[in-house]
Length: 568
Image (cartoon, rainbow, N blue to C red):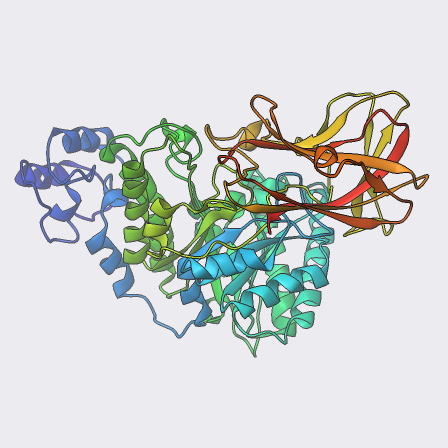
């Protein structure tokens, strides 16, 4: 508490002097730290925390001290004129969707309307993921869509899992070549386009700290390649692990980032480079999993220091370097679901936002849009934004709800819980290549003679992070709305047929049947054709709906692609 680097009897006397006070004394180095658990009072709880740290090095309360500490940490920073785009990243949101030629099963397809929705909600930036081998042209569409809506856009690369098992020299060559290609191709775009070098290296295998030096080689090689092509492109460099702030020091320093540009300038001189961190707190290892599960928010003194430790760790890293380098939390968030207390959400959100501002750390919520059921998502295609969350993030109440599709894995990128069949006798195969009707993949269904069954999508059941929050469902129908169902299909013999049904996913009650409405099957020829159906939902709103393709008891081979369900 007296800043001598050790917790000892000198600190005990300071604690005793403040005992019983209900406000912190304005002494940035001593008495201001005696309220160690941030409950607004110096009492026995602080004494016990002090006792637990007695004899240790450091400060037991530094993680929960806010205002004066943030000022102190920034006082001696070397100020510099950073790229203006970093301010736009102070108010951002992740839009985690797929592209026609690259994606995974739980995601919606990218639509320009997603970015329009983000702009209307008051966000000034969006963040999207680009798998290493994703189409440049398809990702460029996202860049154009963001800039059209006056949004800055962060393109964040997902690396290759093979890098972990390959010689690091091979991996650095690959990531450097790819970023050099992108930097050259997209040099024409303004500085509202930001490159985030690599998302969460632990996710591609680099989990052990003994490999973190190699992770920094990946970052350094990529930045050097970009700077060779474009000396002023805004860049975000993450910490190793899951971009955890505790690994900023010693890894995100010039010890590891040795790239140069514009003569002999380096990382500390680079006003177009900032740092990305991620954290979701409190979580399971903290003993109460509010951020990534359904647990209620505990008492302030239990979770406030955990969140503040993440923020102040980044702030302290910047202070040790002594230069005002932009720090952006490009991922943070929590589960939201009908049973979660709005009061708890507001308290948790406002605490984060207050301290992001105090420590001058930007933030981009994960995630705005992925699908209607996604536990972290705060946008629903039929209901709009979670206003409780939006009140804290932007303070805007958008009045227009764009029309976007609800279907996940609509391009049939990969196997997963998104699409299922009612009988294993119907063979389901994912087909890849240039013959796909849209993107580079489609679904092949082989139906034997006499077998009845359906291909369907509804609220999924999955494991791990996609286990799902209670009360969240995938597909909805809102009373009075007109819905468009469309899909592209062909059959091998030109004599295929299907019928479309919408059901209540709980009791299987039929809400719509294309055969009953039109008195005929939908005929599928041997050439790819897009079929469109309009349905008016005049009944009460249904929040858990099943979309199914009934293939009938007819021997046939069908190919399906690009499925859409959206308000017309």
